[in-house]
Amino acid sequence: MSTQLRRDPADVAAEHLSAGRVAEAQVLFEEVLRQQPAHARALCGLGSIALRRGEVDRGFELVSHAASLAPNDGFTIGNLAVAYMARDELPQAEDCSRRALDLESGSADLHANLATVLAARGDIENALVAQLHAVSLDPDSAIQHFNLANILIASGDPTAAAAEFSAAVELDPGHTGALNNLALLHKQAGRLDHARALLDEARLHDPLNPELLANQADLMLRTGQSEQALEQIRRAVSLAPRSPMLQNAYGAVLLELGRLDEAGKVLADAVRLAPEDMTIIFTLARLLRRRGQLDAAQTAIERIAATTQKHNGAADRFAAELLLLRGHYDEAWDRIAGTMAGRSEPFADLELGPEAELDGIAVRLVALDGAASLFAARCLPAMADRGVDITVVCPPMMAPLFEALPAVRTVLATAELNLQALAADGPPLLHLDALPLRLRITPDAPSPAWPLFPVDRAEATGAPDDTVGLWWEGPGPGLALLEALAGTEGAPLVSLQSGPPREAARPLLEVHGIEDRGGDIRDFGALAARIAALGRVVVPNGPVAHLAAAMGVETWVLVDRDGSWYWPGEAGPMPWYPNVRVFRQSADGSWSAAFEAIRQALAPDPPEAPQQEAPQS
Image (cartoon, rainbow, N blue to C red):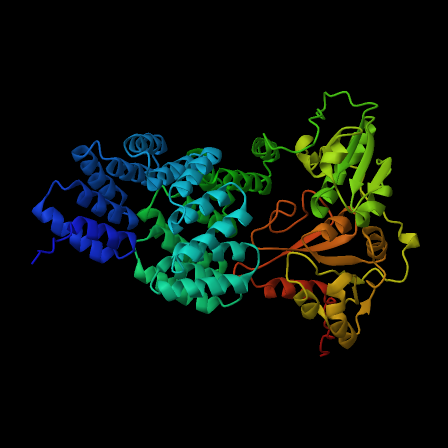
């Protein structure tokens, strides 16, 4: 009768850890170390567990000790690379990854480790090469397809990433990481039902996974289930109370619910747990911005931009927005120019500064974004005054506006824009929306002819000066604006809205007797003619707000709670448009206070109380 040999407990523990059974793995690793205190794999295993729990210093100590005991073991050195990554010491991590591969060149896991390090260092191209090699070494590994998908996301190819996540799920239907990340891709694409189904499936396999709970909370928040979202994120935090990532997610939920004081406390706890975690600092900067503490938000975001590669693009964009909101225009333009450097766009690098000789130069300016293009149009008169021959390339619906500008010689209206084909032939191609950056404009330089799109009130028909035009399509309260203002006394309302939003509002317009003037509006020219007949307009932040403001019409703009550099400050005239008044969304996401402020502003002045005669003696 043969004797069954007992398996190495360290191997069994490693299998538990790979399957996510952390408690079981920890018990076995500790048992091994009680008998063999210098057991390198057991030390590595406990170090990996500590790193998973966010105990970076403890994890690094254990794995470093293991590497000193087994300096020629490729897998131990590979674990040391992971520990260096947790400390954000990326050069050391890359060095260890390459040493590990010298020792174990056929390991798919070690090639994947190198790919992860290279991606963290911003070398996505070589990271992709390393991870593709890992997949070729182990094509039936769900983990390797999962790793490849994550690098494809970093490379900007979400479609290929989704295919790799799906491949991982096909190989391992219970791969919660792949299910979770595939759900995130669907959520980003707006396919919330698909995302919900994938997260529900992931939780069937791992019902107490706090990361899954946190992502479900975010999905609930996006679909208006605010109380359920708060309950879910609190449950996630209770499962891992010392997780900085979950504390950050908790703070982000509170931030979106407008519970700013609570969010501040939670994020302060997260910072104490992980003072160098830039994701937490980013959320803290968002909180400070929403509180109106722009200087403090700037300090926080500059710390991110200065210390990490991971968030640099987003951090630089955020930093530039804050600089614009704070009125530091020159610094903001410099910052934006830095983020645009190296971008592969077919726009000419034509010097437009005040010292450049532009007389007789022909340029074609491409309008890509409605709001940005209408704002940038303020730069055109000054360019024409310097002798520039201007052609504007724009969508057909914007063409009538640019055709009405004396500064523009030619308008090329096109629904199908092919930048590469345009750039290949003809005068230099410039980005119209980027003119404020290229010309380094401030509120008073260059000074455009004002109003930019002048209106002839004598030709405006039909409306008294107190008539209020409403447009609600865009980033703002939507149809709720019309619902809130319907029946307001003191000013007759007319609807300017066109397209599908107009059709959706038609019953409400009929019930409240609001005149519908949007039926024949097909382009911005027709819209401008309607606006010209009004005393004021009420609109969300967007192209229609810029159109009305640039026409010189009194414009009331609804601005979301994060604010916009076009409409900074709390009160008083806006720096870019003297005829604009701003009404802001509340911190909790509601518009009710803004609606009430508009109703009060529209209401007629209360009648004066009649004077009483003094009693006669």
